[in-house]
Length: 284
Image 1 (cartoon, one colour):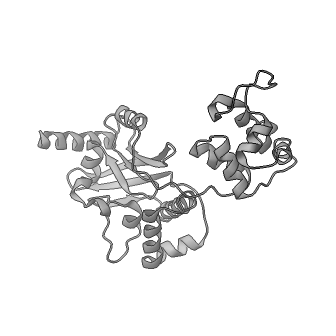
Image 2 (spheres, one colour):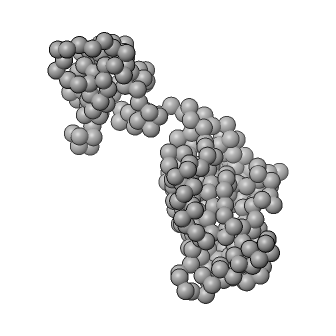
Image 3 (cartoon, rainbow, N blue to C red):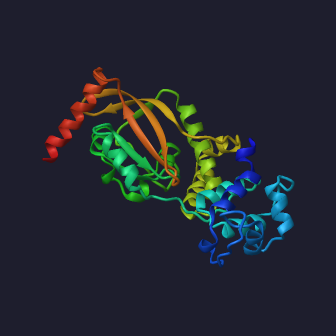
């Protein structure tokens, strides 16, 4: 870690960007800094001036969780900044944020710009929250499935008594084991980011108790992200369609944007266009 990105430097930057009026302090003409003084920060956080000084000088590097929470409040940090502060001190951020299904306007504009590419959006727990017409044409329409059953993890790792489906017809994966390991690793990462989320906790309990394959992979301890696959969609109308499946993570909500593409001008690209046009013709 460089001096500019260290805990000490980060605390100084955050302190100096706050003005006294932002925190309700009276104006003082004789100030050596435009931002808060160390004395101001210490008083607001309930810490000693000496301790704040040692933190900003790099002589104290492991504050307690209580001290970090106090500093985050005194510095008026956003949720992302607060989490970053916890990680700089070697602590896990508090799990007070739930898994979000919300697609921000910016992400929605991005999805619109993807045009006719088959795209679907999943939450951090792999609950399907959005899809476009091209996705429905190629994979099957998720609207025909109950909302609570649209979970990719339970679809990939079936659990008795908990039906799930995000694909209406068979989809073959080039390396199924690698794909499964990536999904399990991604869910482990999500469990650390959202330890208090009830929906995610319930999903993991079902998978660990109801799918031995998932439980075995979970015990491996891998942490990572589900990123890409090569798939073959066994479409009931046009036959086999070969696609590249890429997963992009968008925003602080950890949304997963899944895009299915084929090389421009290829037979597979023409098949995707064929099924897309067929569905539009039927729905007109």
